Every structure is written in structure tokens, then in C-alpha cells.
Image (cartoon, rainbow, N blue to C red; front, top):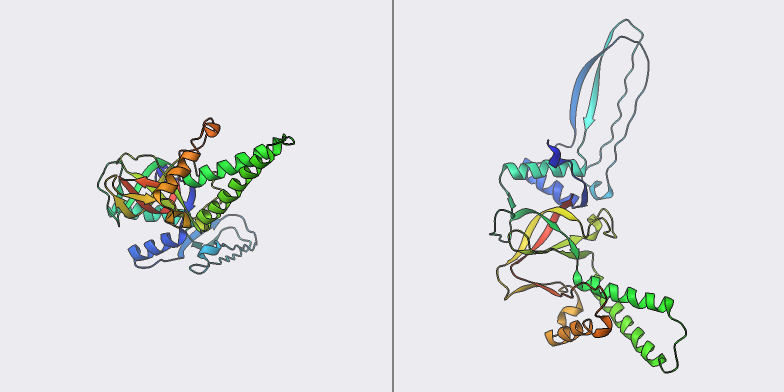
Length: 291
């Protein structure tokens, strides 16, 4: 083991890790027993008990209780045999999986290889961003709420304008609900060294922090499987493919984009509004995201 194995995961699909290790190793030996002999010069009597638990995600796959008892009688010198049960944590098992994939040359580093096809297991380092469409809409809603907090009693004649402002906000909240009404979310990346941009589709239940405060805007390594690969800019990966927003014609989406480029909003630091990632691009189902 080297320093690169001392990782801190912010996302880990434990089920996939166990499945892949089981496939590669022909099953998982969940408990390894190790016997050792100790010589003690002092006599003492003690009872030791311990129990190891695992997360709910693993409870159907692995449940291990360890109770070790030992008794030492007074004597000048005594020998004893201790039985230890050793288990992998999800992180240590992922490290073992990653090592196996590297040894078998199943894990492609796309920082040095540009040819990526669906089915490839890949690893790359990148900065991750939240879905820019969701982030822009959420930022706009937060802006309206902030304006409302500091807003004084509206001047005469501005009531209808404010009503229209909040009506738009309610419409955007509805759109956001449609975009976020799922147990999965998309993260995006800038162009990788392979020239691809990546859409990383995560399952929220596997996040270390559901708010993703420890995930976005940092540089992380991603290990996952490619589900789609686009070579040129004539095709794209939709960021709103799981919502009703995806049914809107391009002309409506372009008008929507222009609304955020209006002079009144020009000075606001909104993310660039994107609803698709044009090729070259890849879509990735991550196994782990870690620092």
C-alpha cells in the first residue's frame, strides 16, 4: 500500500464495489481468521468482547459479530492462542478492487488515453460542478428571496411588477422540482486531458454529504464506467433528460437563456446556463469519487 491508497471518499457505491470484487475474486471471503501465540510474563484474568457493525447498505450482504474471550491464569509464563476476525470496510474493499483493476489492466486512465468507448472502466482527475441548469435556477430563486427580505414597502405602481417577479419565481420553483425529482443528479466537468467533458450521474444515497458541500468545486478523482461516448459536437448529452423540461423545443430554451442575459441580471454571478453538454463528451456512472 502506498500514499495514494489513503483516500477520503465523498461518494462510494458500496453495492457495486462488493459486486465487482465478488465477480473478480469468485466470491468474497468475509472473515479471515488469524491465530497467534503470545507469551506473557504477568498473570491476569480478563474478558474482552467486541462487535463490528456495517452500514445499512451492506447489512443484506455482510453481518459480522466478533466476540473474543481470553483467560489468563497466574503463572510465571503462559501461552495463549487468540482468534481474530478481520473484515474490510467499504473503503478498504474499494482500494482492493481498484488495485485488482489496475493489475488486470481493466482500469483505463483517460488522462493518457483519448479513445473512450461505452463499457470502459475509467479513472480521471477533475473539478466537479453541479448541473449548471439546476444551479442557475436555484441561484435565481435565492436572489428573489434575498430581494424580498430587504425590500421596503413597494412604491405606488410597482406592485404589479413585483407580482410578476414572484410569479416567475414560482414557475422556476416548479421547474426545479421537475429537474430534482429523482434519486440521481448530474455533475459536470470542464474538458479533461482527453478533451472530453464528462457528465457524472450520481445516486444521492451514496453521497457522504447529501448537500454536496464537500463535493463540488474541488478537485477529485473519479472511478466509474462509461455508459455513453460522443465524439463530435453534432451530438450532446442532455442535462434535463429526466424531466419535463427536456420536452421543450430548442427555441423556447434559447428564449429562456436570453432572459438570464437581460441587462437587469447581467451583473449577477450566475453560472453559464447549459442544458446539454456537446461532444466530445462522456457519460459516467461513478463507483467512487474521492480526494
